[in-house]
Image (tube, rainbow, N blue to C red; front, side):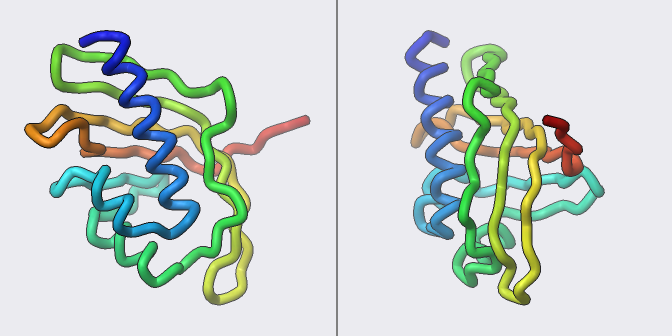
Length: 132
C-alpha cells in the first residue's frame, strides 16, 4: 500500500459521510461493500440494505454529518485492508420530529476489491459526553 491508498481511503470515508448527510443512497451504495454491516455501541447490527433504505426514506434530515477535523486516522493492514478511525458529529431531525445531536468515535474497515476500495464493516461508539 502506498500514500495514494491512504489518501484514497481517507477521501472515500469523507465522501461516505457526505453521502449520508445528503441521504444519497446511490452514492452510499457505490462505496459500501455488498456484505457491509455496521454495529452500533448498543449492539444493534445494521445491514447495508437497512442503511440504504434509511437514506432513501430520509429517516433523518441531517444538518451535519461529518468527521471532526483532525481526528481521522487511516491504518493499513497488508495490501487489501484498511481501518479508518475518526470522531463523527451528526445532527439533524428524525421524521418523527425528534432531534439527533451526538458525537461518537467510529472504526470503518475498507477492503480492496476488483472494483476498488469498499467500506465493509463499521463500528460506532455510544454517544460521547464532550466537555467544553
